[in-house]
Length: 181
Image (cartoon, rainbow, N blue to C red):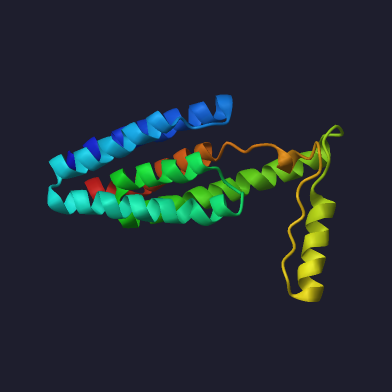
């Protein structure tokens, strides 16, 4: 029963953030802060000192998972903060696994976005840009980033909170028999 009291609010946080991100391409700081405080408090009350420490470590691991993506401009600050808030509920190992699942989901969604440009005439395809970056890496051994062109499908903001919500939900479904069975 303790686990359910941690996972249900985590799901609510992740999916509410996903809805906001889909609608306005932003995740409100108030929502993330409320989720973080709730995760810390619930862990402390339901599990005790060990739970509170797990929540703090989960927060740090969650932030660390998406911080490189944020620093390179692939994700937004709200995404990194949301993953940190999710970490307060799932703890360090749980948020690491859920975060990796979220990154895989985000990669799949990103490939669908990129592939959709092949079938939509009005959008600029990213594939020639990707090819040039790959050739540069192959010939020089150095990575080269070329920013998306105006109108390119990969230049639009991507609601990564949806990937976080799917990844966290997938992790919970995967863990359900282990945690509650």
